[in-house]
Image (cartoon, rainbow, N blue to C red; front, side, top):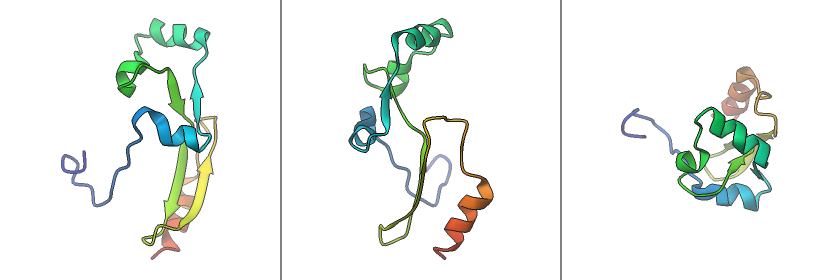
Length: 95
């Protein structure tokens, strides 16, 4: 992905949402929601590359180049995300 899109930053990957689970940011889809996904031909285990029906809670972490976490936003409601201007302000503090 980095090469394909010529990204100038690292892209992190969490196989099986294992790290998310350790941080309390993974949830198991209930059976009725699994049925809804399957009704829309969404094969979550295939997309995730593991047999679990789990998703990570959406989170945005801003870390400085020395690895110190400077800002975190996590919300189980995927529709609530930080405003882009807020994210840009946090990033500007790192420059």
